[in-house]
Length: 123
Ligand code: 5GP
Image 1: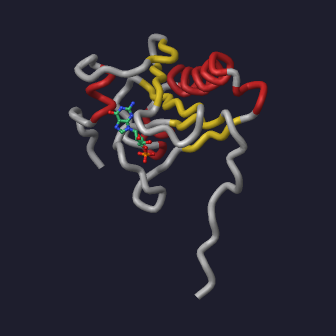
Image 2 (image 1 turned 60 degrees about the horizontal axis):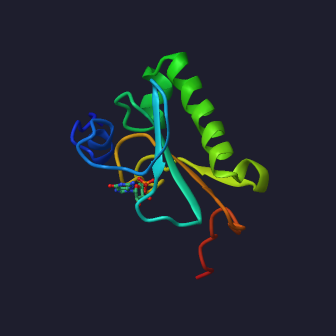
């Protein structure tokens, strides 16, 4: 899948759309999700143009990969969920129900989040 330069997160990186910034460095940006699913719901993104984890792990530099991991740790500390616990989610592709085609990690916390993924109801 080709990277869409006009996806919503690309526009946030370019400053065309505002965001509630939580953390930023040369390679990453983290901002509050516009529709939070938990008291803490922050999205961590690389500034580089990567559609998904498939794209990122194949094409990103080691520095970019390290920066995203470090940014998650910074966000956890800034929001306080490093102490209470949190969940990382990276929806990837169709079965992952990825909606925005720019790699992003959801950092969710601030309450107990329950089970990871619901099993389908028995038929
Ligand atoms: P996905 O389903 O792709 O893993 O997650 C996309 C996330 O982006 C959703 O949680 C959605 O609420 C969030 N989102 C979509 N548009 C915007 C926006 O314009 N600003 C912010 N801050 N979050 C957005």
